[in-house]
Image (tube, rainbow, N blue to C red; front, side, top):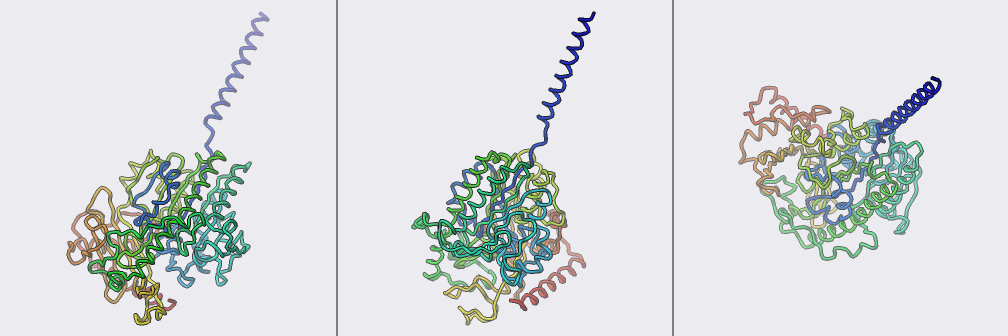
Length: 557
């Protein structure tokens, strides 16, 4: 009997021990996965229409082949500071009020610092207990004396390496956590793209050793391929035989376009074509260093064994043109070459070597990053105008997301001009960005708002409708299915119902804020449109609003 009791006790202990082991094993197996890291790489002026991704073989290998490429990614304002402000805040220009690249236009101004800068990707992600890092170009006027100098460190960033002013490769100043450090022209110590790459690698290695395993968010913002286009020495002889792409609108005049397009030289003068060719070669050369940066970042994430738990997002602030419609070089215009930018995403659960056709925007980047940092819960600040694209690049949810995705969006720009151009005084008041051949890239009345419709499943929903604030009250309309190069303005030949429908949608988007920017609109279906008295009243209000805004803008241009 005594032996039986001992045997039973032994069996009881064994069973209990086994149960504890099983519970412990299950606890390990069901342990909540570590929150993902997020790396956001932002280039400056990288297009897609002119082949901006073509030289980037490492981006293709490490990001595109391992992730999802969005073929219809757009900026909502095709100029540096307003677009970057949209990227940081997830808001359209009319809601963040950064009008241009000047301090008076609210680029990194005191007003921005007191308002919008307190509600950016950095501040939101940091509040979610992410360790944050920024390196490179921030906003064009950052660090200037009038707005606090390099001592000002924007909220939301635990580690800050902000470039003072606009893109440069040598002879610049960086703010190292609020301390100004001047750099010279020694390639090995100062070349900015490489310096950013090396600092990013150092940060990743340090964070991989963090005993607390706090996830990190990095925003890596390169100067390339923005001018002055200083290539790394090893790439100075690359692409010597390449010339600016002869796209469908290269060195051609469109039919019935805004006056700024009508003042170009067609055919372009040799000086302008040579300048465009030279710029094209130099831009690609600078991108080769960005390609190296991407490889260094990916390889470091891999060697520290955190690559599989890291999202990498790659994009740019705006596109570019080189000879399209006779414009020598710049951005700012409403056409596809200036508003299309790259977007590639790789990371946990992201479909590999896949392309997505849905229209996605720069204002979607902040909601997407915050959504990921929030545990991919779909939650982001509802004051943002964009939406999270996470459901599109995650293989399990992409089909349902595509069915309900946006079919149109807003593009808006506030033109810049000066009293008299020093290069072209004969053109009179209000132009800017003028080249030696007296072709001006901008003017104060190059101010426009557009609705761009795009439904990959419906070729008839591929329209660009734009209204200018000028003495002509000019309208441009393009059917991009039949006219992808935007050569023929169809405002006088298209169905009047289309004009009414697009005008009404422009009013809705022009006034939208937060959730209303994500709604489909009153006339999203193809039923006949009949304007009410209230519609007519609102059209007059929006026209008056734009006119008054233009008058105010003239005071500080």
